[in-house]
Length: 215
Ligand SMILES: [Zn+2]
Image (tube, rainbow, N blue to C red; front, side, top):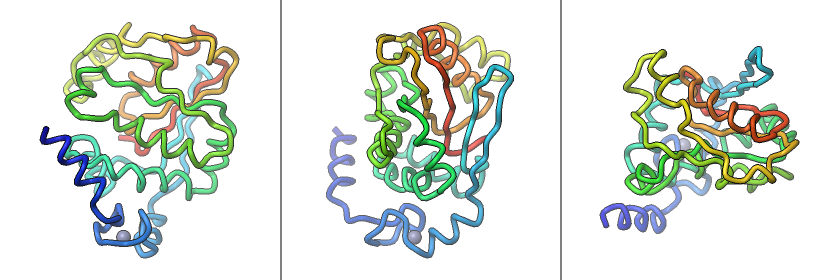
């Protein structure tokens, strides 16, 4: 109930700048846009298995706080600002347009019910709307085990914790496709690697991990 009211408030609340929280017409005002561009950068890393990871920020400071607010402090409306960060970066925009499908990393249904939304799905949806031909597919991959929160575990336990927790429900849509796997934060890569593995096993051609920030 509290979440429903909060969602309603978020809906009727006037548009505020995602970064400075003042009422503005844009989801990122021009002053903040200039400020953000100073430390937002198209970063790309390539892994031996062929997967690429692209991201815009280091997971620190104000961007870290915004992600925490978005994820844990019931601020789903921040999705517009986050999506803008990806769409306004020219290198990122053209990189994303090379793919066929965008898949948000799923969260378990209990967690989604509790939070009210999947934070990665909200941003992926906004992004796909503004790309040329990249379709959002949110029901391809499912989290079938409600495992422990990754952030509470060390590297070794994180790898174990995500084993066999994701399942591909519909492989017809991904066979031979180039896929963006969207997540909010990249830490050890355990989650991304596990999703990459199941997508490739199901016939995906190429998978790129796209995140807001790297920890
Ligand atoms: Zn602003």
